[in-house]
Amino acid sequence: MKEFWNERYAHKDFAYGKEANDFLKAQPIGSDLKALCLAEGEGRNGVYLAKLGNEVTCMDYSESGLQKARELALENSVGISCVCADLGEVELESGQWDLIVAIFAHFPKSIKQHIWPQIYTSLKPGGKLLMEVYDQEQLRFGTGGPQHADLLYSKDELIDTFSGDFTSLQIEKVYREVQEGNYHNGASATLQVIAIK
Image 1 (tube, helix red, strand yellow):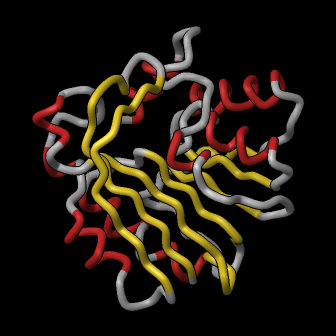
Image 2 (tube, rainbow, N blue to C red):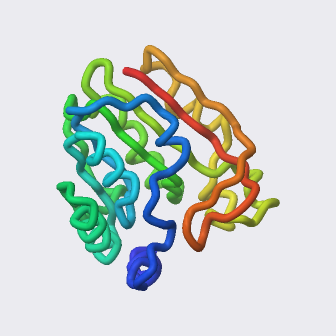
């Protein structure tokens, strides 16, 4: 999969565009936050958060994607930190982040089981997780995302993953038009998560 993403991001065009995800842009996000963007690819969401005045770290295991994230940050006159890491191996420090963002972060079960339980402990008290992913129903739309059910999500799966710790947890299944670059285009079924520690 690492080779797949390095190849996808090696092209001149930005695979998912340069604009941040619509769900992320719709959220009330302040400034002076320490923010982590997981599976951030080419940096569109991280750069958006940096433009709001936040200290942003973009984490992905594609070096070609992170290189384009650096270029996008330079284009927008903001600074971001980039960490090339496998989310199936990384250990997030506890109490480090005001905000964690995961946009269309689709992984095999083993990686899900490794990274998602770390979210709660790595957030500061009052910290927030913002997440949008494709629902398993997305397979019938065929407008973006993985074409394998085990890489997609269900609402019940996310409830099982995140319930029990967060003081506030909202998980909504949403049908909406997604227009993001060359690979996310059209009517879609997504799951949107807002979790507060």
